[in-house]
Amino acid sequence: MHRNTAITISFLAIIAALLIGLNLGRKLSGENLSASPQIALNPSPVLASPYISNASPATNVAGTTSKTYLHHGCGISFEHPADFTIVEATNAARLTAPNNENKIDLVCDTSLAAPPVTPEKTEIASIAGQMVTIYHDQQVADTTPVDVVILTNTRMNLDIAIMGFGEVFNNLLKTVKIL
Image 1 (cartoon, helix red, strand yellow):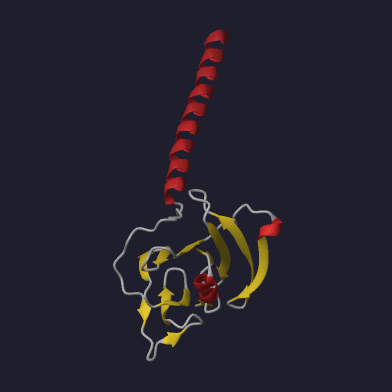
Image 2 (spheres, rainbow, N blue to C red):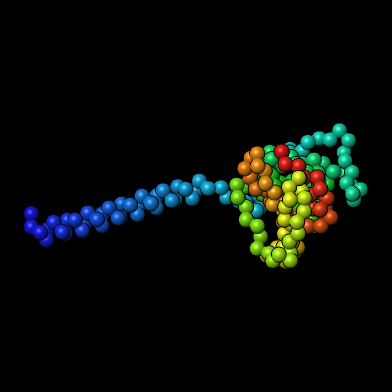
């Protein structure tokens, strides 16, 4: 075989190997991306009855009755006002007051990032036996204040974010239990 022919064939073989490798890499990375879990901040509705019935309804600080909510997917429970409605998804839930003025969101995943706030807008608290940071932030859409707490469920290897604001939210945080 002529020397120039051997060089051309070698060059074409190297190019073919690179193209095949790139094509396989795209296929493998596409499969990995589609298999990773996605966080849904606005959970899709699932009709379920996630309540644990209390023999005698508890009364919270504001004097209203409360119910215990249990989210099996996140491994967490807490007390909430009895008149709140709940929309639940596999890894999330939204609790809404009847007048839509107060919302509390719950999201869990294997790794959740803390909101980007300055140290002045954080405080340390003990919730469910864990020392956690409470992030005082605001919603992007309408600058409504929101507090974010990220807990860890070590048994299920999940981070759990609870987002809300106000007296109802603060009372809820006092009753959080990691299952």
